[in-house]
Image 1 (cartoon, rainbow, N blue to C red):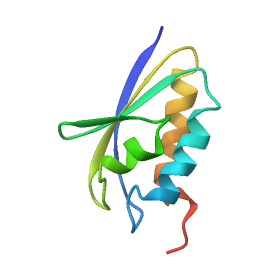
Image 2 (cartoon, rainbow, N blue to C red):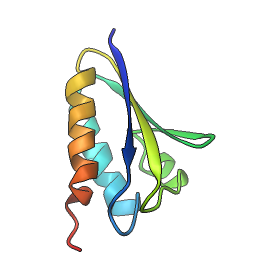
Image 3 (cartoon, rainbow, N blue to C red):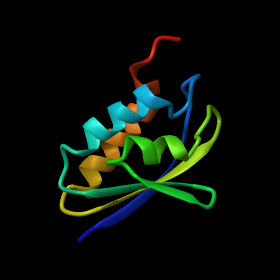
Length: 91
């Protein structure tokens, strides 16, 4: 199973808050991959809104995204697009 990782910068104003975390969960469940986000000594499955919120990722902070499984690359690319696009938030 492929395992890839990438460090991404949280750029949206509100960080990884409830709505952003919900969008991330909806996105990642479409792929055959296990996706985990790491920030500092914390980690969370991309399938858990509460877990993602517990990371307390704010604007300007980096998160490491690790994707494992058949769709690892496609899933990581989709997560990166969502984060770069500021979770589709108006600013």
